[in-house]
Image (cartoon, rainbow, N blue to C red; front, side, top):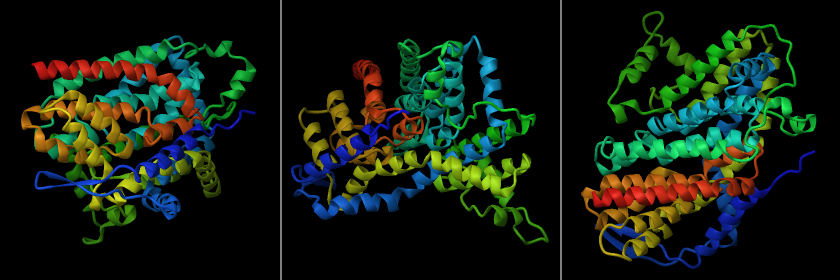
Length: 477
């Protein structure tokens, strides 16, 4: 029996306690009328050691529910007896082309993450591709690196993704296309480097036939039975899995804000306007969802996965009891990831609560920025790296940094500043145990945080060097 690893939860707790200690040492600061005003320290006392973790649960429970819903969805798929058959069919199709398939997987995840963002929606497909990759011969850490790692690489090279580049351009008042060529080139470079890095690691890929029975048992694959004799068709499941993922991507990406496309909003409005009897909004009342496509969040995703679980269970003639047991069983498998995903927000909760009276991030960013006169890529990189420890949500990190940056930096460096901030934030989210998607991925597949850090640090150092080089070239140009 494999010994349970506690390095992830230990790292989350250590980071929280480190912030508690820092709260006694580092003062806060506020920005008003282009002036930074230093305040006093805001120490976290003994009561706060219990208060902030409890507050985190109440504030960020929706992310835990999202992870549970993904587990529940796959639990129902597995209950049909067809899911394993589907994965095996997928594995048979890529046999002999496993490494090419792996390259396509990581490239697709990176591109979709870069162009659309919406990592919550992208996460829905991760358990499926983890299963296919592992049954094709890739080990657990490689499967996570090719899927969740690909999503995070896409954030480093975000081109249009609303949660990163799209928001940043909107906040700065510039077109999202400004500097997009530089970001696209960076994306291509780091994705190609990442694919090569993962596939050339020792033990990353072993042909399934060469695996021993002990190794196969040690690497139990998510939601797969050892074997299946189901003769039911895979086609309905394929259709509904594709439909679920497309619907999640379409409904959670803000098409209007980024690309000025309102077709999905209009379609949703027309759909909700369908009535019976001339006045009764039948679709709207059945779905009970008010936000139009492009504005869905984690709660809508939970509702979507729950509804699709019922539908796919009904199509495969499962009794409600079986659907319920499958959903609960799948959610139970993801209970630990759900708890950890909530916990990794403890630092952000602490910072967020005291933000109105100033933050340590503002104080630190101001001190680093004023080390030199004018724009400097190293002060931006340093400020972003430290700020990412406090903020695991890009929206808040970018707002916090730019309130200070905009005091001394002109609009002519906005595009470079965007690239540097998102890139360093992306690097930190591939490293820190406060990264929601890293925590979700590692805990879903039982990969040790300690093992991940040993695995990824060399790649991140090379990417950092590339970002510095790109930053220097852009400043000179």
